[in-house]
View 1 (spheres, each protein chain N blue to C red):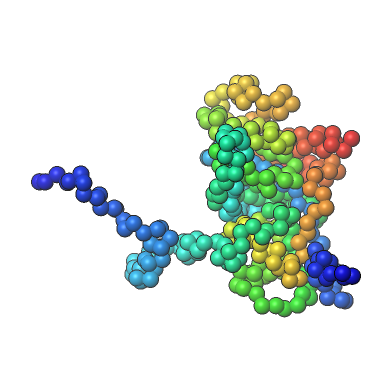
View 2: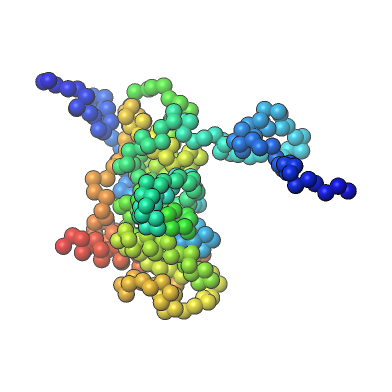
Length: 153
Length: 208
């Protein structure tokens, strides 16, 4: 057996394609397996670069929009053309006030993306974003949290 | 120029005349649960939350602001991390969010968005890996955010005593070091009450 020449390039275990492209080509070559072992649906959405949805904007998020900031639907807001993601956000806000973090988690949207889209929907008059006037907690609010926590068992 | 319409930006939402009043939303407050990987942050969040903990993916900006390398002040890298959080409705007008912060590296904590407006933090410690919580302790000390060190006792066992942990962390006298069990709601509730006591002290000091 001839030992491998050290000058020979070591064959890569996988082709030297960027991972993102690789997963794309796997899909296009029809990775259908009759065993039913499909990758979960989320796996494909995760490969999408998150900020494609925001047309590449990554820093347009309003700094006042925090993770816990509450969002509500503007009653009787004018109908406007919405992307699937923004339509999903509007649908989530229909029932009751919801935080930006919950929107992000429930729609599997990157938090930064969610902030930008929520900001867009506020700008177009679809959503109310309840930004707090004062983000330093006051003693009275803390007392209410303490009383609330003490009452749970 | 007499009137520049662009200068008169509408900050809120455009309203239709005669539309119903905007919906009321509860005031959100938040507590941070921090610590190294696998110390029981998600268990802590899950024990107190009224919903199963949710996960959100977020970008963490790690910025070296002259801590380790003052020469490269603008080096900035982004990492996407998963973060768990839970909710506890205090009443119709007040909601408590509990955010579990990921990561144990120093710069992973350079996340001012997360701490802004937070009441305080619980730093969860596993006595087998005390060092994992150092970045969190460093960060909250620097931010001046009230925090409590909570030793997660898992099976009611601790490799070190509270005093030994306090010594290892070298936290200020007024920073409480307590033990709790992340699996039990009442235990997590009590730990959060200690955090809230610290938060209340600070809020009263700030007001006067």
